[in-house]
Image 1 (tube, rainbow, N blue to C red):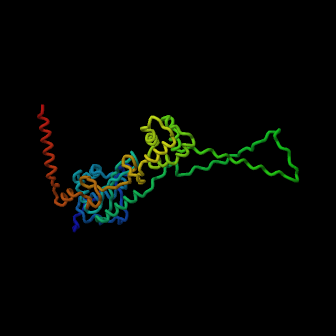
Image 2 (cartoon, rainbow, N blue to C red):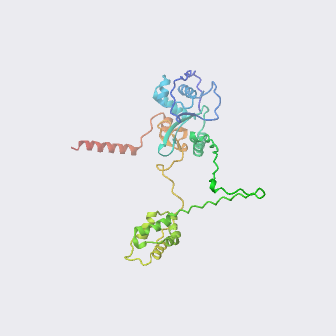
Image 3 (cartoon, rainbow, N blue to C red):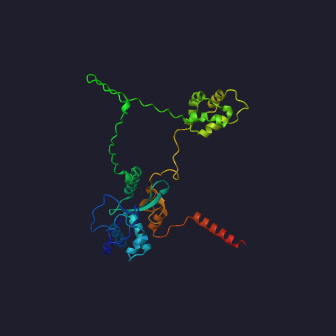
Length: 346
């Protein structure tokens, strides 16, 4: 349990007007539901942590939160002291560092943010909040481009001049007692339907190999079988190659030969569910990873209690440096020995 420090804390320096701001989308982010500022804010923290927390709390959203920038504005402490203070504020439940993927396609990049809460929060609250933040980013619709915000005005109606009839072709006026009925406009002729890809593939067989020349009626009769091939995901080139490969020296009846091959060599039906696109070819879902406040190692919020990874949390609890993994130490020694041997080789 934290013990209040009754010693007078240092007065928090005012935030300068020229304090650097991070790039859009980076920097400090304030969490919702914080209590109003009061004189007792951060009263349970040591003097240094209370001093740093008061300064960070007065920074605007979007301000740069790097250790280097904070140390420039807080000359009483160096970068190492600022880093240690931020670790303590993370353990106390006031901040979490995260990284999230922004952009789409080839423009995807990682944005680094520091979520800040004047009110101390426990690990469960932070885990729930970061999960909600991830869900909100995933469900957020893409912003429409500026050009499409305002609908384009409807074009003004254009007056179409009436077609005039030549004087010599003008009909005689009808008697006043029996006005002539207006002539019905001629029905437009529907354009012929474009041939299907399967029909065109069958029609091209004769040009690929004269032994498989088909008539128009033959192509129409075999079109349904060829369409079934294309519906199973094969390409036009695959269909053509399957029908023309290994032909006998003479084909007596091309339509019957093609029909037999379409029925016997039809490819298997593949699953209709397409595999999920890879991050390099598709748009990745927005991700949000918390990172260790001390070393920056990324991970899920549940794996980083107090905002620290396991080695850094052990070092923070014991006040020393994290112990090195014996396996990693042995690997480093072996690599260095190998490098020394290479340097001795003439």
